[in-house]
Length: 385
Image (tube, rainbow, N blue to C red; front, top):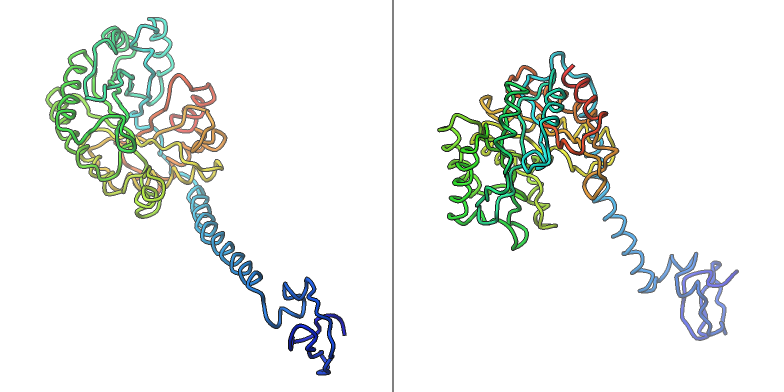
């Protein structure tokens, strides 16, 4: 018969029924491991609380895995499909590209020979704008003139060596949105100081002002107020107002979910991106640091971001998509996945599907001091041609 061969009638020698319905009296008052855990046959009868608890835990674990994996796999498939197909003919540079340049260009470390080499590098590319790091701004919005002592020299040297290239002042700061330390855009005096700093930087001869304030949360009305005030200044001077922009929600309201779970929303809503784009002359999407693990998924993500941005950027605003000219591997950025060839192909695919004939469009290269020859070659062969 075997031990515990049927439904139990009782413990302590009171006997239990066998599979054949016979009664075995004087059963030993001993419980085996199979008795306690239910055993092969005992599972058909009564289960102990311990076994029931473990069964519930296993079901909850399986459910959690499915809740996490299914959306991730679905998103991965969607991004891979975004990367499929061929870009449309003519989806190449419009001559409105840009590059971010480090602080060395205005603090005395660069020479005339460096400007000559830069002009040679830019020749026959689509680059029109240089975003030269001239800050950062102080947390109160002010900008000491000592931050850009060689600005006039640089601007004059670039205009002479590369006529038609605009030298914009790249100004930024950390915002106090996720920690108490940083710039408080909610303070009216701080915004007024940023406007004064912009007048100051334009008086130094810069051809425009480019702002990168992070982390900037979606829906921030104070930022919109600041852009309105800044645009009055740049418009009066006849120069562009440019901004670096966060990525757009790849899924509806994802910034809200991320903000609730992590305190770092990361993305902007598409509607807010459009509000920003309508207040500036040029908007450059920081389409890198995406946490995508594969080159094809990154390219698909860039294609999606390009389409989302095109849908809400007015035709009078230059839209630029960022290319990763840097190679560090860190949280949120895998250099082997976020490559220039993948980004360029993604940009061309998004442009092809959404607005292939758009004139006011380009790419922005981040950043000069980390770029390799392979990066430049991929940009020139994939986008400039």
